[in-house]
Image 1 (cartoon, rainbow, N blue to C red):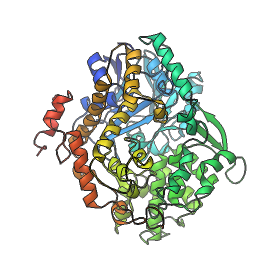
Image 2 (image 1 turned 60 degrees about the vertical axis):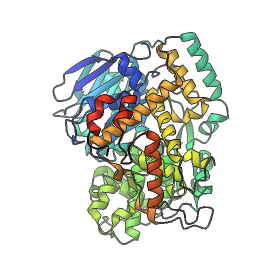
Image 3 (image 1 turned 180 degrees about the vertical axis):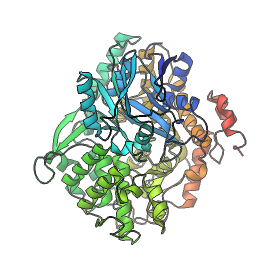
Image 4 (image 1 turned 90 degrees about the horizontal axis):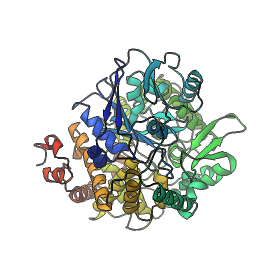
Length: 618
C-alpha cells in the first residue's frame, strides 16, 4: 500500500541495537498514522503503570500517510507519543516544519525508542543507516545551538533535527521537543521523556522518493487546495496569523487574563496581532509543502532586547502576555525566545508564571520565597526572571519546573485553587466559563487541558449554540469534532488548513485513497477517528485515569467572570459539568463512568483491549 514506508524502526537506547518491523496494511488502515499509529505502538510496547521517566516508558515518533507528499500542509507533520509525566496519561504532541517529511523520506512510518543510554547521545538516521552518536558536547546547549552543531558535525545543512534544551535534560515536566529551532511538539512534557533517556536529539536525512497511488488525480487535488489556500479560508494565517485572535477573544470576553482573574484584558490593543505585525514581524515562513505560510517570526531591532527572535502565535502571546497581565510586546517576544532556548512549552510556562503571580498577590508566596522576585501581575521583568529560574531548575524554579499541579502541591495553602490545569496539563487561552461547549472539550480531552484536540470553541464562537448554556447535544458536537481532529493529527495535515476542506470527511477520504490506493469511505474514516479517540481513552483508563479526571479548574467552577459585559457572572457549575459529561459519554457509547463498553470496542475493532475495561464498566 503506497503512502506508507511500511517500516517501523525500533531503537534500544541502552544497547544501541536497532531492528525494523513491517507495518501491516491492516494496522495502517485501522490507525491511519500519526497519533493513531503512535498510540497503538506505545500501548503495544509498554506495561501498565509504567513510570513516565523510566527507561521502560517508550517514546514513539510517528508520521502520517501523506507525509513528504506535495499535499498542502500534509507533507510536513510529525507526532511524538508517550506516557506524559505531567498527566500520567496519554502524552502526545504534534509539530510541523520539515522534520516529519524527512522521516518518511528516510523510509519510516514510526520510530519506537526504548531504554536509556548510559551517556548523552543523539540518534542519527541516514536512510537505512541508524547510529547513536556521542552528545556529551551538546548537553546543556539550546535546541537551536544543538541543531547548528549537529549540522556542522554531519556536514549537511539540510539534515533535519528535533532536540531538547536544558529543561528536557533536567526532566522538567513542562519541557518540549523543538524542530527547526522554533517549531515545538510542545504539550504534555515529552521533552522530559526524551531527557530521561539521555537522548539529546534526533537527526535525520532521507533520500527515498515518495510515490502516490494516483498521481494525476492527486496533483489535481494539490492544485485545488493551493488555490483554496489563497482564498478567504486561510487569509488570517497568511496575514496576521493566529495572533489575530487576541482582539477577537478579548471582544468576546473569553480571553483568560491574570490567571483567570478576568476574561478581558484592558490593554489588549498593545499586544494585538496588528501591532505585532506592524512593529516586529520580519518574515512569514511556510512549512514543507505548505501554500499558506503562517509562521510569523518576530525580531526586536532596538531596545534592551535587541536581537531577540521568536515565532509568535496566539498561544504563546496570550500565555506570556495577557495571562500574566503583561502588555509589553518586546518582553513577551523575549519570553518566547527564552522558552525556546530552554526547551519549555510556552503555554505551560506562561500559565505557571501567572499562577506564581496569583499566589504572590494572594499572599501564598513571599518575595523571599521567590528569590527576591517581585512577581506582581504585569511585571515583565518578573516574567523573564521566572522563566530563567524554571529553565535552569534553579531556586524557586525547582518548585515550578514541573508545572502548576505539582507546584501547588508543594506550596499548599489552597494554592491548588489557583492552579489552572486539567489532568496536570496547563490550560490554554480560551475562557471556559463563558464557552460551555469548549469547557466540555477541555474536560474530556485525553491529553488534558487543550482546545486543539476538539476545536469545540469554534462552535461557541460562531454562535451555532448559546455559549453560556450547558445542554444536551453538546456531547455529540464535541465527540464529532474530536474524531475529525484525531484524523487531522493522524493523516497528518495542519489544523490551520482545516477551513480549506469544504467537506472534511469526504475530502480526507479522497486524499487518503489517492495517496495510498486503498479505497476508504467517509464513514470508514469517521470510524477510524472514533477508534483513535477510544484507544486514547483506553490508555488513560489503563494508567489509572477515570471520570473524576474529566473535570475543570477550581476557578472555572467557583469564580464567575467579574467584568461588566456580555458574560458577567458566567461560570461552570458541577451540575452543568455532570450534565455535559453524561451527554458526551452517551454520545460515545460509553458508560456514565466514562468507560467504553465491550460492545463499543467490538464495533470499533478494539476487542483485543477489552481486558482494560474488565470490571470497570459498571
